[in-house]
Image (cartoon, rainbow, N blue to C red):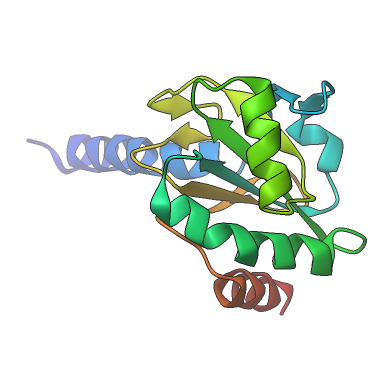
Length: 160
């Protein structure tokens, strides 16, 4: 095979390999109904970090991380970040509202039916969290619980 053809194939392979990285740099968005009856768009929060946390009331690891998410939200909501909890289960609004009240959650709770994939990407298990940067781009994904310390460290390291 001629050298020129090898170079062309290499460049095509390189381009194909980089395509997923390029697509991650594009702003992401979704539209979901909140427990409060409002419609939420991810793009409404441009200019802030947004932690989108997919969870369910029946999920023990999800329940364990709720206090950490609440503290993170309370510490950042008026400054540089917000938490959006997405209850990914089939549950009556009244039951979900009672759970949210029992847990003293102040961040917006959005609702969606269980799904393997969302506008942000795959949700292989609960909890799964996506961190969106202030430009609306996907910055990180965590399958499993996140901690306040992890969130603070990630945002601080990005600010440097």
